[in-house]
Image 1 (spheres, rainbow, N blue to C red):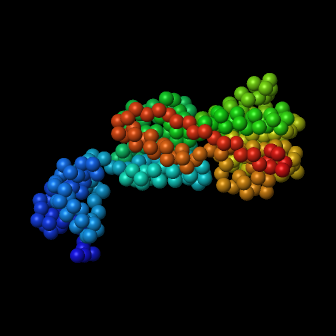
Image 2: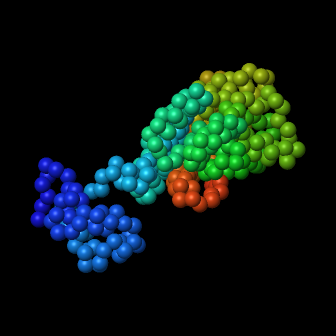
Image 3: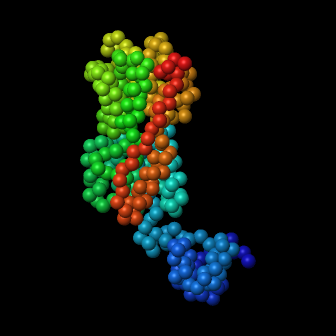
Length: 340
């Protein structure tokens, strides 16, 4: 038996061929796996499923959403998907969503508040079941307004307020770098701290600074500089550090792209990472190990962060109470700090 390829297989077509009422066929095919026995006798259930498989029946997603009042759609906001960290997180989100029968779409906000608001309105207009924000500002003011509208959401990558989030333990990662550089004897160090509104930069910098403070070393203000989370930002911040007097013996940049910018600035001054000045980053992006001087960094579980973020949202949509999760990072030591 084969289906007419010119038209989709419908519930009515199946019902007519089986001599059953269309509502019976619908109940069987749309029942949860553990509830199909309530829709019809086991023999009828088997007949319906067998014919549906033979004819290649596929549910109409639009009709399903109308019936359940759910769109099975999740909107994801990130600063920029060209960032490999955010792209990897989104891959994890999309993978976990597919396993749950959910669809996702992503939009870029460029970390600009007016774009965040506009993109959020666009996402909500598509009647999503929930949202995942990867671009949260630590003050959470905008998210307070979103929450007031009753929209279920979780955060990934960055934390903000008391909203449920899945992040790397950024503070711990910063401490790991601090303890590593201390073990190598570095006491005059500097931090390329990232943007002041993002918890990633704040927490990683604080973990690093606390490791040094506990060793009796407080960094002077000129040794901590803000920057964008990209190579150009890291380059400019390192130029600023080098212009402020005698250079530090080590630099911690709070993400790998800023660290790569730092490496470029050192090169421009005739300095070599790992030999003249130690440099460390954060995230362990694929490029980190392939640089001319491989980069010491902290491996962040980016893909798992995305998966767990989607799982957290799915539980929230099911009415569960959820708690934020912090995933453990791993220190990866390479030649940019050891010279070997």
